[in-house]
Length: 106
Image (cartoon, rainbow, N blue to C red; front, side):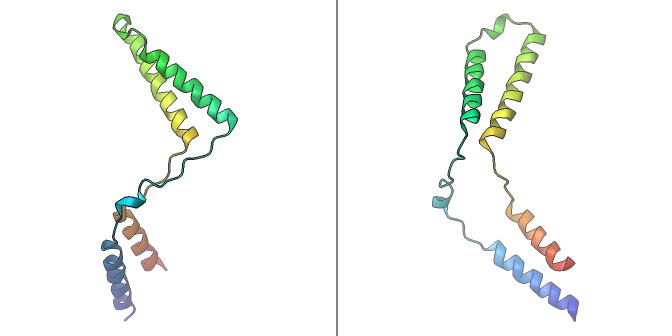
């Protein structure tokens, strides 16, 4: 009897979350993270370095130098992303699986 209740609850949860409406107007309303003065200065330094690299003549560089610049750009991107703060996104499928596991385990 208990197993049938769990299955019914799981089925209800799947039905509930699979028909959740999405609205296009709500996606662009995320407020930007407020940066401290130090973080703002660091982002400006990163932006200046990226612009400097962009203006460089890369065709004259050797393969190893190009690889170093590429690695530097990747590290700058990671650092800027960490300063800006990106959110955690969970897909609908993952959310359904998490809910099912919570229902089963509790």
